[in-house]
Image (cartoon, rainbow, N blue to C red; front, side, top):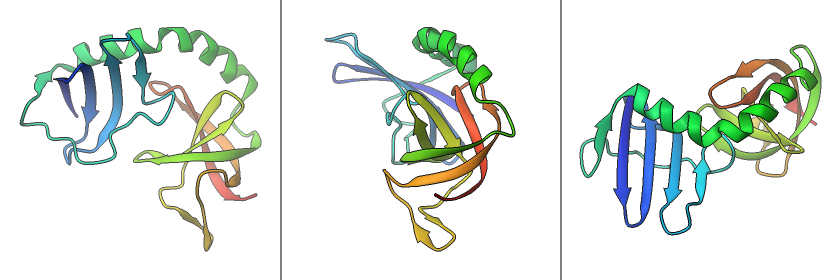
Amino acid sequence: MIYIFVDFEGFKIWFEVDEEGTALRQVTIEESSGKIDVSCLGPYLAEQYVDTHNDCEIITCEQFESVWQEATAVEREKWHEEKLKYVPGMAIQATIQYFYPQGTICRIGDRLFCANIKTSWLHGVSLGPGAHILGTITGYDEPNMWILLDNCQNA
């Protein structure tokens, strides 16, 4: 992984990217308002290649994790409660929100799930935001605070 910091036109942005330049996690702070957007809580992840060579500062994993932990601290309290509610083996229906490199991000109420669907097609049916899927909870993505779904099918 590569960790970078960008200070661009009133925004401070921290990225975790893979070797191909695909953003996997991101924290963005708008300096004028103090608003913080975190990729694990909404559609706040760069959609295109992230240039890790120009106009950025390479930072350590520890520096990134420190910013990430601080930006997600409030949500972490709720996360521990949600894991008691959504346990592995449980079948659920979720609504697709958007697509990330890690999979299809879905929602039930306030909680986000990451379904093991890496394409906008499932069993020959086109998927998009608002579509419903059925899946089985297989575990948790702790850094992103996502519940993981597999064995997905159209609802």
